[in-house]
Structures are given as C-alpha cells and as structure tokens.
Length: 416
Image (cartoon, rainbow, N blue to C red; front, side, top):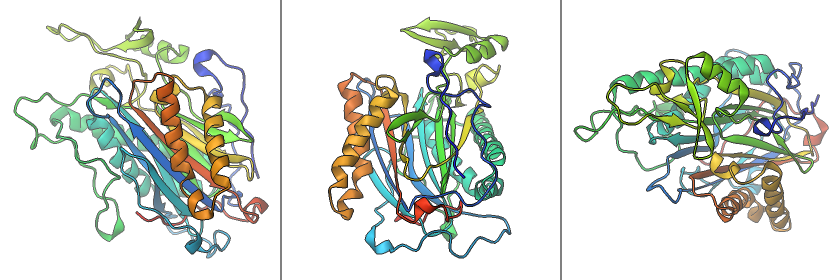
C-alpha cells in the first residue's frame, strides 16, 4: 500500500503544509515497499554573528527494533551484500557527515536537528535525551513495526513531552556546564545509549546564570518504508517526490494564526520586531529587558513554559515512502529555510545527486554529504547569517524494493 500526500493551498506562513488531521492515515500493515539502502549526510556552519553554533544534530543513528515480545521475520529485506557499501563513521555535529544504512536487519533510523536559542544547553541535552527516549519506547517501535500511524504519532508526542519535562526540571535546579566537543550521543554498556548529560552546576563558573535557553526539535524516524516526522519549532523537513518538494512539517512561529491565538489565549503577547513575529516572555520585576522568541514551540524555555506561552507538542506526519518516487529527504534548521525555498532546495540536491549517479558505487556514498554541503553554500550565497544545520537522507530503490515485498522494519547497522 502506498499513500500520496495532499498538498492543499495555504497561507504563506503555512505554505505546502496540510493542516493537522488532513494527512492520509495509512492502514496498519507490515509490507510497505522499502529502500534497498539509505544514505545520510549532514553539514553545519556557525552563524556570522555567533562565536559558536548552538545547533546539535543526529545523522542516521540506528536503533535496534524492540517489538516487546513480537517475533520479527527472519528475513526483513532483500539479501544484499554489505561489502558493496562500506558504512562510514557516525558524524559529529559540527561538520559534514556521511553514513550508509544497508537494509538487512530490523532497525529504526533516526535523524534530528536541534536548533538552540539563548545558548546550547537545551539543544545538547535534547540531542541525547530524544535518542534515548526513542530507543526505549516500545510503543513507538510497535507502532512503526505494525505500520500503525496513530500509535506512532501518540508515542512521538509522548517522547517530546517527556524530554521537555525532564529538561525543564533540570533547568529549575541546574546551571549550564561548558559544552563538550560536539558529537553523536555516547553509548553506554551493552551497546545501549548512555544517559544524557544534564546541565550541571558542578562545572559551571561561579555566578554563571541558570540555563534558561531552549531549542527547536525536528526528528525523523524511519523503519523500512515508513517515515515518521515530528517537529516542534521552525526547522523543516521536505521530501522530494517525483522531483517535487513536499513539506512534511509545519513551521511553528507566532505568525501562524493558530499559534498566535493559542499564545494570546494563555495571556501572552505577540509583537513584530526586526521583521518577525515574536512572543514576549512575562515581564520580570526589576528586569530592564524582556525576552522575545520567534518560535512558538520548543523544548526548554522555562521562562515561556511556566504560563503556557510555548508548548512542546510536535506535529507528527507518518508517511509511507513511495518506491521509485521518493528520492530524498531534507531536514534543516531555519538558517536554510529562511532564505531558500522548498523547491529551490530540492532542485539543488537533485543536481548534486545527478552528478554522483555517474560515479562509482563507492563515490556515490558521498552524495548525501555533498548535497548537504551544497545547501549550506546556497543558503550563505543567499545571505544567511544564522547557524545552518542540514541533514540529507537519500533513498536508494533497488529492483526488488519496488516490488513491495519487504516488511515495514528498518535499516541495517552503520559503522558508529
């Protein structure tokens, strides 16, 4: 079974995004056609006005599928020689990365873009905590494994709420520690995920203010031919379907009527400053300035969460990939999308992939990384001065994958 994504007409601030509830809901099943391989590449650049980036990223992290007692099929995908595709090392968060997933075992593949504001504590924490929440959530695994879109949406929303609640609790009592060298989350014993490092007071300089920053969160979870996209904030995921851009997430800003009405109903105020709609934090007695944010959903941001001005609930889209039609996915922060249109970005990636298609199989493994770097350059050429984070996921459809015989379980181990 496949499903197409309706793209209704929309207001400029909601362009290409079907309103919640209008996504086609695929019937639960376990035989979605799946790609024969998935290539991931990411790239980052620090904004011109910043001393260091506040963004963190997950690039194709693989998590073993846990069906909590359900027996997975012995052979989930077409047999494929792993030696033909060498899985490269997992990427750190502040440089171009390239990874390959060979689809032979039952695994979830996770990407994430965490665009911090006011600091990098929340983005750093969310990067690790979200991956851990997804790894531990058997309901999410069962939802994706059974092709159940409703269960998948509910589980991802619960994961966002859990990470946000834990982060806010830490921010009440802890101060930010200096950011470690950027990289993918560390692994604990038995190959599991190490607990996320909380904002810690122990290593903070005396008098350092409590960390009250926040982060947007765009997370994709792929299991075979089923893709789930969860977004809170103004990062964006765009799918290339038959050469056309299909937006799979909605930008959460105070400019959206529904977001502005929610904020005002909670007693908040939305103003326009420096050309963008911004939500004002409640005034603090004795303070000479007032905090303002141009996003309406996030993780962290305790100064805005206490009165409900910002929320962490993501929009979640669950989309069956269409064999031979869905070529790649772009996940990126607003440093890209603020100046580059959806179709413009899709066209730029398509040019890079076409160039690599003429090369050897080994060389083609770098196509996703090269495409991510090309998008960075495009945004900078358009005048972006913000932090930019881009993840490109390329879907390779083999002859067997288009037949639709593979189950909805996911991707093979990577070299991480």
